[in-house]
Amino acid sequence: MRYSFTVLTAILVAVLLMLTCQDAPSDQEIRASVIEGSTVTVSLLPARSEVAVGDKILFSIQVYANRSLSAADIELSFASQYVQVVAFGAGDALGPSPLRGIDHIDNGAGSARIALARVGPSDITGPVESTLATVMLEIVGSLADTNLSLSISQIELVDGKYNIISEVIANQAVLTSEQ
Amino acid sequence: MIHKIDILYWRLAVFMLVLSLVVVRLTGAMPVHAQALPAFPLIYHGTAEIQGIPVKDGALITARMGSVVFGPVVVKDGAFYNLAVKADSSHNKEVITFYLQGAEPAEQQMIYKYVNYPILPSAMVLTFNSMPIPTPTPSATATSTPIPTATLVPTPAPPIPTPSPLSPMSVGMEIVGDGTLSRGERGQLRLEANPNGHRILRLEAIISADPRQVKILGSEPGDLLPRALSGQQVSGAAMTVIIFQLDATPALHRMGSLVEVEFEVLRDGGTGEVKFELLGLNAINENDHPIAIDLQQSEAVASVIGFPGDVNGDAIVNIIDLALFGRAFGTSERGRYYNAVADFNADGVIDTLDLSTIVYYYNKES
Image (cartoon, rainbow over all chains, first blue to last red; front, side):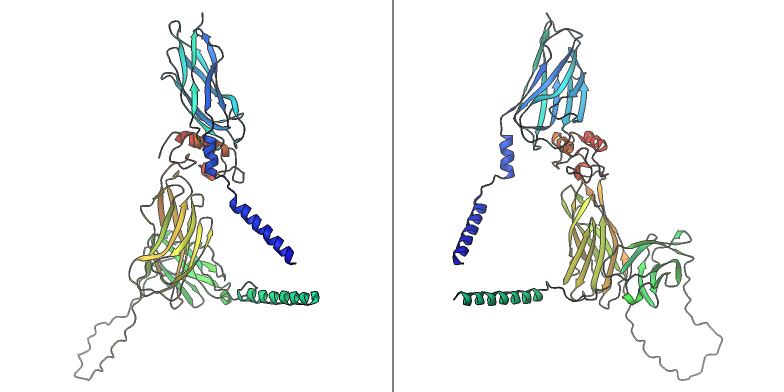
């Protein structure tokens, strides 16, 4: 009787010690570790790099991230005397039919912007290497004397925990005149 | 030896059982005989009109049940509030008749229902045929009787001083502070009054607001009720506050606070304001009679800053809000990912109408 009481007490004390000494990471620590992960890269990839006036070129905006994404706000800038944006659409990085918060093309000012968000909860695991968006451009001016660069002037990505990803590297694309 | 220990354990177990029963009984955990619960008043409010025209301000409305008169309450802007009718269960199903100026009966009547729990006030439209003409008081008319000669006229006895009737307790409601709040912020609503000499023993108030806009958190008795015990029942954004004074308040003639209610704003200022309404107020004096109430202001409005679309409440609508909105998109109130804050038009469904709102406010800062 006394022996079993001693054993029970010892087990109880051990359980209490285990519960109090656990060093569980706080939500903030988890969030910080996600945000401080490796940099996310976004690249503009043209279907081809040599173009002529009148051509329509499809660009895909590829994202390489070590975490899932829930939304993206992308603004492109371009020299409007050479190219015009025909269409700006969603890719597959944010699910099959993401919401569009902004879908704005200003060919006069040489800018185009799209804001997309995944519908439903984000998959919080796994890296992403897919197409965020696609842009269809039409060449309207001769590129004989110049190389045309198309760049991402502003980008904001939101991860699966609904935090802005602070470090995003955006690569520009360069088009040259067809020989 | 083992046998002795067994007996000892048995005795100890029986003793512990008896002891626990005694403790449970003393602490009230056991069921006790049901006690008669006090009646709660039926509170009536609504409009009063004479042949379709609102009754003029200052007119008095009373309710009668048998020989018992309840009220009066004062008509203001054609409306009356807080006409409380309370009686014991023996009056159940008796007819309540409403009177204008104590003389003109209304066409509408109600049936008294004894309740021992707070219920929402009943709204009604009282229709009267006419405004009763006050009965002229007899006045001495001049007669041509000769002036009597010196006869002894008995000296009239000095009049017995009667207590002058007290004015109704004036009551209003206001938001504490500048009345400007944002989503998630807590505010305070105050029910103010000047008792005008009435001594308050008990107070019952029903305050409501749109439950989609605010959450009522709790209430406390105000400075006019310093020795009070209060209870409250919150259902959505309707709150019933019941306050019992340990003894009747002094006969005060100053403005003060009856009840202070704390609330939390749930939404951004799509409509720009949150409105509180005093649906019922019943004050009882030291003689257990209702105190006449002159309701100066039965509504209080708080301005809500911010705008819909700011789902995470950081004062800017940006891609994070769109991401959070996307998470809830397509859900309805019972859905797992439904987010009431993202349901900007509060129709219970997060759909393209709400999307159009977030698109409209995108990139805006408050």
